[in-house]
Image 1: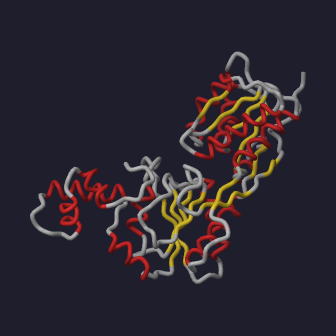
Image 2: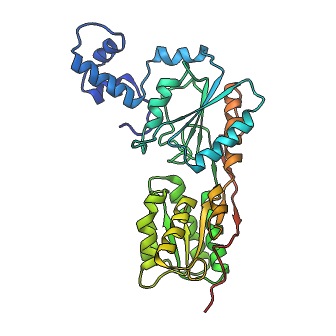
Length: 337
């Protein structure tokens, strides 16, 4: 798989192990190419999301009246962002449609290439990519905006939360409550947001002159299932932390479930802070103290940015970072001797 470079016909030829002329013949349905080679070439074209320069130019004239939201999966974060996009487009001349690019299969890299290749121009006038794994795609004339891209700011205009500052607020809250041994349950290290939240955790620990015990730094993948073993590690270690900062709410909610199974009281024995403020965090027992990122506002900002691009206006900002805030509920309390 190519990284984030624009895909060219030479890239396709190299990946398929054939000549450029063979790629051209396959794309134009010419004779003289074996069925096996055609299948291999078409598989590479689909995987890389390649379109010919002629097809890309044709996108300029296409008008469907539809804006697409392309997401890896319909999980809580993406659903909240989608609400904001719909709110901003209400009253506009565009219809809104959403596609999941990764449900039921590995969507860690490149899922958006295939979706954009299939939908751009023929189905969609423009697209918002939520949590895309790459942000450089071979569609120069097709308007796109990225929300919380895996790699951070890149080729596409993007909107995201201030992850590092939000994490700092979470740890500062725990330190102010008297906690010294603060564990961290992070996300995948290939995600910019996970890296930024870990940096914020370490920033705040340093600012409060607290040592980071690397045995208390564990990582999941932002999912409930992926947080199971990291949560168990933190809750059952010999010198258990008195507080945990989980880098997203789904992971924090799994910590609550695991604590209940293990007989660990939250917040009586361990205080807990999440990150996101998804609706489930309010309904959990205890209610989850968390860092609220403005997911609906992120969606609205992305939609307004996209409308500017569609109108061929140069937006004043192409990298928009929105502030976060601490929401205190029942999962944290003052450390008692």
